[in-house]
Image (tube, rainbow, N blue to C red; front, side, top):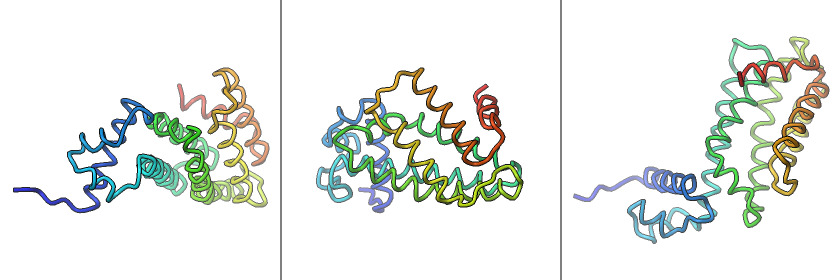
Length: 208
């Protein structure tokens, strides 16, 4: 007897198959036909749920951003850390999630996906901005930060970091990228009015 699956289940299965293929073969080398074949569906079924392979990539990228937001909000709402520890924890967990989905992140940066790249960056700034602003407000109360406009400030920082580290146009070497990430941390500390070196020290502890 043929199993009838709900639209949500079928859509999730297609996304899971596509995600596995993008991770193993790469986005550019994966064809819609291969997604269809491995998902065990008709081609028409694929196009019922998704307009194109690019549409699949956008859905997977939005899933990643939503997961980042959920985990960041959990950290922001926790009562066991101060504001600096929360900022560092959010940075660390976002880095872990990006590393786990590196092929998806790299695919978003391809020239042909430029419009998607820009839409996702806007989504990141709009979703993560208020969460991080909440942590900065906590830091203000704890006298760890001194920021007049937490939301605007963190959105500027997010936009700058996404442009510098989310673009392939700069072609940084590993050493150059590390130097700029360290400079970004100093910039964040100074912008937030935090004690210099506080975030760097905690981040190093997280990676040890």
